[in-house]
Image 1: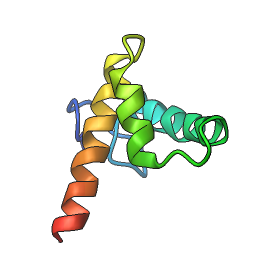
Image 2 (image 1 turned 90 degrees about the vertical axis):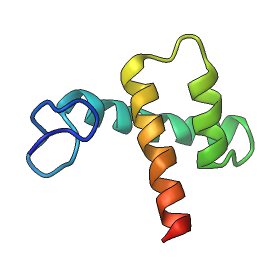
Image 3 (image 1 turned 120 degrees about the vertical axis):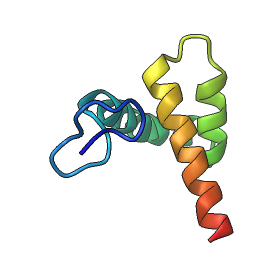
Length: 77
């Protein structure tokens, strides 16, 4: 199979390559710290803030775009 975002080979049990998978894991870990610092910051607000940072890398931004599309699909479905 291929990564949903870049067409590299995906992880054995996943839908993303190792780079995008690591980016998604880092986003999830980071959210925990941000929730404490910003009093229960929602996942959506966290993604918006991280995406707006100049320091945020390409793989993280691509994963955020995928997460945003996924949440839209869930609302429409």
